[in-house]
Length: 118
Image (cartoon, rainbow, N blue to C red; front, top):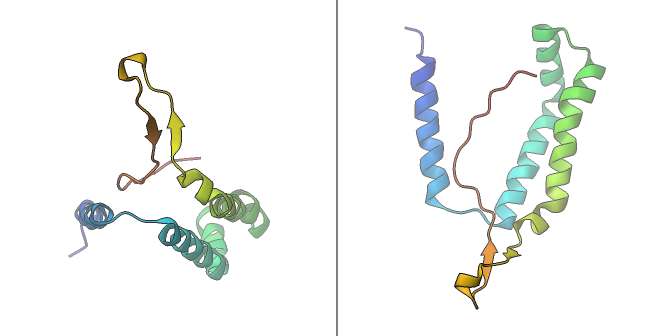
């Protein structure tokens, strides 16, 4: 019997949701995840380029300039700026809360699946 995609997707979502709620990731864990994703993309570059050629008839130049290159560039940007992105940001409070102080802490809140046509 063929696997049910919706069931598999729901199961994967539930596993990832439990894992994301079970702990928060600090700077080193986030950096390692970004590095691992970068390694995955570079080590499997040929397979990715081959799949894009078979599925969409994209040349390797086009793939590297519109697919791989964009993602690797964004990963490099995240690796470079993650520490500053993670710093708490001080924000003003209202007069009603005087003399309080407030900060925004940027933390991952869960699991997101993004499916988009480009």
